[in-house]
Length: 297
Ligand code: NAP
Image (tube, rainbow, N blue to C red; front, side, top):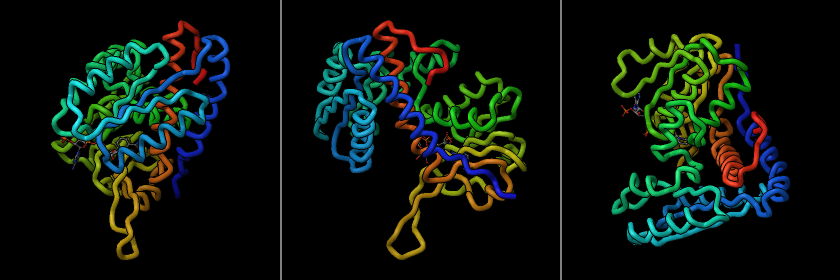
């Protein structure tokens, strides 16, 4: 048996096209484009690549992209003042501060300063709380993207056993909340979990968000399960000096047992930016008091 491949790249391209198709109606109704502001502090190469791709995707969707670059030695006060200016700017619907921030800046304080109604990354405690109690808010992009892939594959998730490996605030915890809201029976596993293979073997849905290359082995997977691999790990490649990307799941082993699996790259990765654009479009509608049809995106 060979698992079906869940094509996150194609799903994300389709979601981005749907968002782009809804922008002209927003523009006509609101008299402006939806706006996303991205703040980058310092010159971390990976962060620069992410910020560049977000800028490009925002423009391609027909939205306004505002980039704010601060030097690595910018003070915390300067960054907080930038966030506050963006909070007050009517043309900005979404604010994203690229993480990680330099060590002298308190990340939690920066996130707490973002207006929760512009927090399209969904990291503010207000949005974490809204997710926990089932109120409309903003959900972190990567787990929301995983949920979209799961619902596209499985339809209703009600009653399924789901195991989320990882309990970070940006992936594991919100993922577990989303699955609970879909009426899954949810187990959250982490570094202290006893007998992880046995826990994973119970799962109809496995979401791996660990950051350890190919840790989840093929023989941990229940036959027919749906496997979502969030991990992005760079490891040495076949040729000397070359590297390659692998997930947190042993893809070759798991795809012989699972019903469906996301590849790395091309699975969860492309969903993050697509969902960011979706969240920005939702924020723009809410802020402008415009309705967005239920389930439209
Ligand atoms: P993180 O904050 O480092 O959290 C990792 C989690 O894995 C922790 O909860 C940790 O448990 C758990 N863990 C570590 N070793 C374990 C083990 N041996 N057994 C079971 N659990 C273990 O990582 P993250 O930010 O959630 O990211 C996870 C992965 O997803 C990374 O590879 C990251 O690159 C990737 N990622 C991808 C995207 C995307 O596709 N766009 C976005 C975000 C993250 P403890 O809490 O007990 O320490």
